[in-house]
Image 1 (spheres, rainbow, N blue to C red):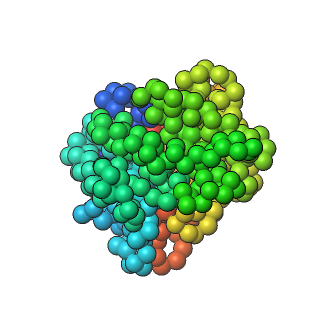
Image 2 (image 1 turned 180 degrees about the horizontal axis):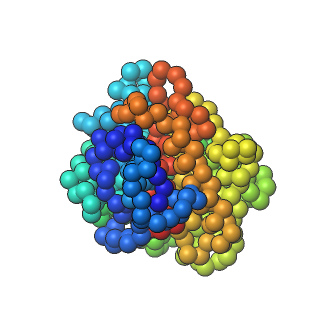
Image 3 (image 1 turned 90 degrees about the vertical axis):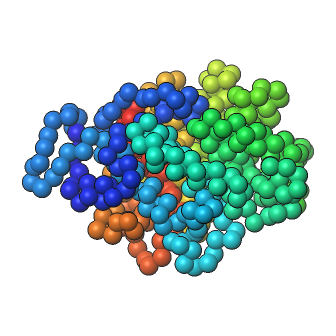
Length: 418
């Protein structure tokens, strides 16, 4: 089993629940009450085995990625969450006062909390209950949505926004939250947002039928991948729950994405990790419904590209690249990681693709682990690029969310025995 220095154990012990075994789910659509019996696993190439003890000031931790995930997620919550509202600031305790318009990023920060909740619900129910409370506050506060134009239209009205992609990301998190907690109102809200605000914006012309980036901009050129990839995924997930014509809508948006991809592997130009990951997951979900191999093949292609191409990855270190320091750019990798893990854990995944992705996810996690300054815990921040320590004086919620998402992903693989 992988050895972790004592200082990591000390830092992890300060994070609530750090000594609990991971109880991750292999996929987002599994029953949240099913416990995963896997423990340990590959851990990114280190030797397995449960034996071990103190050696040269080191200690063996039974589930090292779960412990590190607990620490990184705790850093995210304790430094970036307004615990009165369950929503997230862009900087620790909002020191820069720039969090008013942080909306779509809320989805991916909350996804980290949801994955942690799923791991801990059996082993640390008190902490899981606290996380459940944060989710409820997040929903009650409309995920920090700054647009109040449609508040009077029902529970879903508070999530209305001119940016179509923002609503798509929020819907994906509401669905994830519902499937993880069993609270059906979150799922219904996602359906209502999609039915009332997202799909009615679809534009059809010679380019096909797609969703515009903004409701106020009907320019066909605004139908970008960052809107249509999550729009496709929301539709296919709604089909899983409600059937109806959501599958037709998902395939329509899939066809639009395919028709406008610059090549077989790039979802858009420039290629960005979050759209590569989201479209890959949409394809994987379409395969699960239709059993058409083209969807699973495409999922593997776009996910591999994100982890192997020099456009998305530092190929020398085999680590996902620095995509920028804005709140948008810094959170991109948090979107990719859970969907790559879903593919790895899918029994229908191509064996070669699954194996390579697993190796690369673990390599990214090991690289970030080496560059976390544990002496600074609970301000043990992840940087914009996992191949170097955090630099600067003010940390980014986007960068921390991406790092915590990576560790939660590694913990899910660990729990599944991968």
